[in-house]
Structures are given as structure tokens and as C-alpha cells.
Length: 106
Image (cartoon, rainbow, N blue to C red; front, side):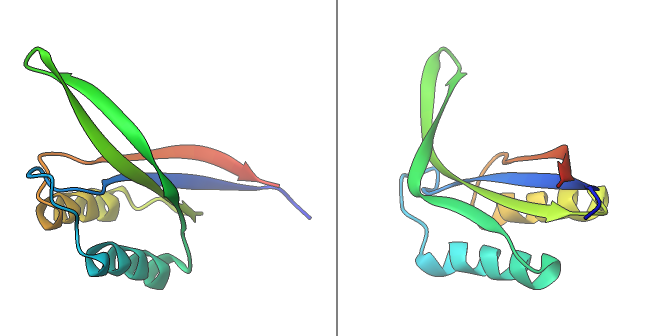
């Protein structure tokens, strides 16, 4: 089997909106279904949320997040940028982290 160069796209998705309200299950399910339909699958680390903390105007802000990953051979930066912007609106966030790493599938 030959090694394949791929891109690992990671989305850090909050579990709560900015008012502290939990998103309906249908919201996260819809995001996952969209990723599965477009890319054939995804991995979600959702059993134990990660804790994100950052400083904003002199105080710490905390978020519970889940990590969703998608592996793709071709990286469509424009699509991912638009998808991030759409998710920011859908999840009522000022910004979301979507990051990409080059990986080799063995």
C-alpha cells in the first residue's frame, strides 16, 4: 500500500452559544450530516468536551468545544472559508477555528 498525502481539517465547535444556551441536537447533527454527505465521513470527538480558554479584554473567557475532523485529498480553501463563515452565523459566534494540517495516510 502506498502512502497518500492528505489534509486533516479540524473544526473546533462550541457546545453553547454566547448566552450559555446549549445548541439543539439537530444543529450539531446537521453539521455532521453535511460533512458526511460532502466528504464521505468525519470524526467527532464529542464524548468529553475540550475546554478552551482565552483572554478577552483582561478577563478569561471559557468555552466547551468538540473537535470535528475531516480528511481530504484536495483542499478547497474557498469552500472551507465559506463553510466557517456560515457556521459562525449558524452558531452565533464572532469567530470559529477551522485549521488544517498536512498528513500522510499510511
